[in-house]
Image (tube, rainbow, N blue to C red; front, side):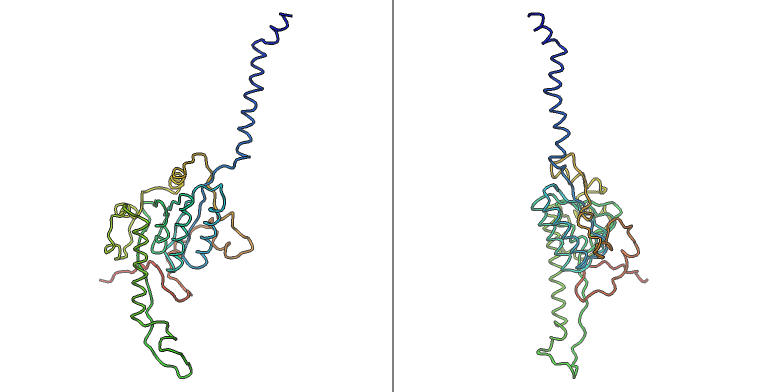
Length: 292
């Protein structure tokens, strides 16, 4: 009887019991954990080319997708935009602020974030850029209406019904939009901003190094560095960076296809002057060759 009990509790037997009782459940747990609890994700949203009602709508859909999926813990917005319409730029800025209420938002300026592109960026918690990027160009461009005239065959209930406003009224509107842009920059950058509104009102564009000195960005960094920073702000280490566009992409929607982020950036198109745009005020960078 004693000999049997000794064999039952031999070292090999105890090791076997340990493997079964401890290591097997542990290994099973490690295997099942990623499948039961989804891996945290960093959403990647791309703002490419001009800002208009179409690109703004796509941007908002991607940001909303990230907010509504609990797996997303932060968002990185990669910006390559020379700007666009004032109202859409402001809408995207507000979309950034809304998303910030739920998770960290980091902007990564790849090539250019001018005018409305930078307006959008200042809605992020932090902004990073490459040293060669073009940043800023804070201001507004507007086309003044022509002189008032009368058409014999057109009946209006007021002298400016046909034109919408006076030239002076349009100037005041442009000034209002300019200050809205400046206020957004001051609010978004906070104490980091080293440039005063009068200086920013000159609407200059700067490279990444000068932008860092002025407090327009938080650092010189690659896109991957920006993604890592977003993960740090979210307090996660093991994460997956996910292109949100691919999740909201509808192959039957030509608009989505036309702006697929995997397309190579066409620099000539990026710098081209706008054509066939609807009337309105635009945040836009214009490159003008000086004449001597």
